Length: 262
Image (cartoon, rainbow, N blue to C red; front, side, top):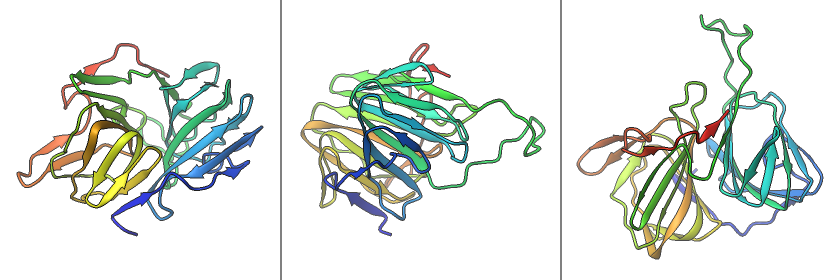
């Protein structure tokens, strides 16, 4: 597959299809794949009618979803728009839509990891996998004039490795030329960004392979996008070769107290 590949956000939705591989949907709902078929990581948009439920079985790896519109409940915890939920591998929650809702759901195609005890013995009873509910401010944030960035997960959790960032600008912006150590999916929520000759608008998603060198620029009114990776990442600035560990603490973000609730 191409190392940079765009999926336009205008494809058809499939009725009755759960917005997660292996998920069980009960009630009205439909979904659409937002990522290339042969990518290492996936993203789906799910549209759930009020009262619809979505359940997971244990045969899955780490996943995340972002409530773009509406409101859902997962294991008796209310998740309004702007909330993210991180599911550890093999977690078996049930989600219910409290209103018509739009979810962005993400994960990796890798097999779920085998859980082990403290001595590394696979198959020994271990603590139940957690479901982390993260409020709209994220677990850490960087807010300054014209910019807001929030990590919902930065791969520093001791029991999961999900990396999920919401970043936005209210003015025109051009990134440095750079690359990342992990495959990534960028889903545009607002505004416009350009990568070379590729233009992305709200609803569009771009897959960028690990170590692919690129830069992006926004339109005059800025942008907002959700960026997902399945594990911890390092950014390399070109041509200087400067390497930046991509987590909240290393980039000077402010920790949000009580943001993540397992």
